[in-house]
Image 1 (cartoon, helix red, strand yellow):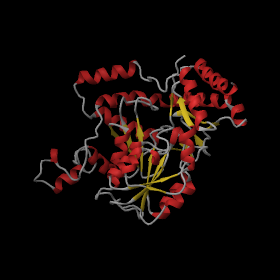
Image 2 (cartoon, rainbow, N blue to C red):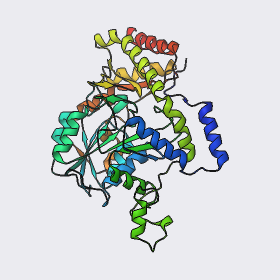
Image 3 (cartoon, rainbow, N blue to C red):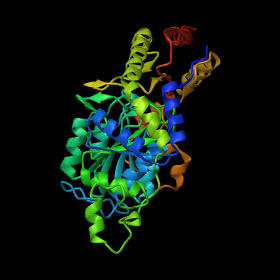
Image 4 (cartoon, rainbow, N blue to C red):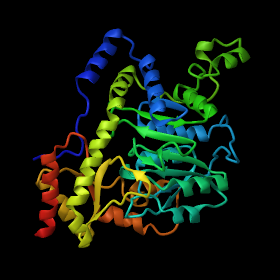
Length: 398
């Protein structure tokens, strides 16, 4: 068998919608993208959704918005300036952290819990200092970071809270969807993620002013897609409203093809995630004996969380054993990956990135050195689920 890390989840509906889009000759961001934004916001129960061309772009847009002179102050939160520190888990993705650096801020890396793979809340609390301006949560591998204490800490210290939810679309925590606890939540619709728009991402926020700023910055800094466009244009009657720029910005717009895919994929998300949960549960049960014997660790779901598995992560007893298991699985046709980027503080790029490490990163090191994951996607069959379970058990029985 060949168990891929991910598989195509689109079919004739998405292809026909894309062909219809091509035939209409309306390809740049338009009605389909706006409809997808509306549907996505309604799905999450969020006030606003801003569609962009990737999850990485959603992160970029979010951090530059919080650093923008036009960002509204909220409950003591001030815009981030050069040198402002942002607390972020060490086990993370590169383009979660690079936008923080590119916006002039300093990432402060904190440890992660090897049991849940989420950021360590005691480490977050200890890392807060006079330069701290924000906390960046990552809901890793479809699990959820316990949000009540993070929300409380952010409010107590007047910090922005951004949730990178690119690996946890559809995960519920405390009765709410992840990505909806902070001021901004980001999502990815890359090929291998919970739904796909080929490439694509989304930033969501309940703050209408922040949403309008995100819309401006997504498209060059102009006023064109803002809800207060008319009022702005009346203030500058001498400037052609089609090219009226009120802030700095990028070009991070999606295409109508991306919107077309999203409109067809989103209604399938609950079904996709239900299957992911079934597969994860089956493997949990298959590995119970290994876990009880201390031969393997599986990701523990955080309290009051309904996960939407991104992959199936495990930790071995040692780095050498992890390497052997990885080779064994690959030889048996089961694709594997490291758990995100591992401990980002150990990546060579950080040799020339201004950052701070807050406390020990022993948990992040353990995740990096002993962890791997394989695919949990809705196209995996029951036969393949059994094959993976039997293959892993056979490795530890040898």
